[in-house]
Image (tube, rainbow, N blue to C red; front, side):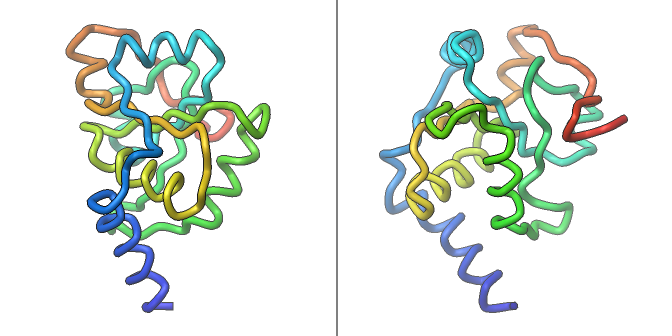
Length: 144
């Protein structure tokens, strides 16, 4: 089990340095266009972060890392797939600053060969700086 965690860590934190060409970096304006076009927005932050700032309207809170930095990528990907309306639906990942979403997005596109993956490259912090709307985290994937 420990070896699996080390390999996951290496693939998530080292692979962005090697290959990030499949991951699309989005600005807040790009993000709004993608949302309007039907993209699936996944907020990978922690529950505490969701509660502190709210989430982008229509997004799904689905944290990738727990508070200790651990993850269960197989379970997470299965949940992600169940949220998609079609196999080719674009998925946009959101975190606080764009770092975690960039690493997870690169992992999905490079290591799992998933297509149509993007992330808000400046995170929800830029969304909030621009005074764009947020909502509480009461959703189907995150009850109140």
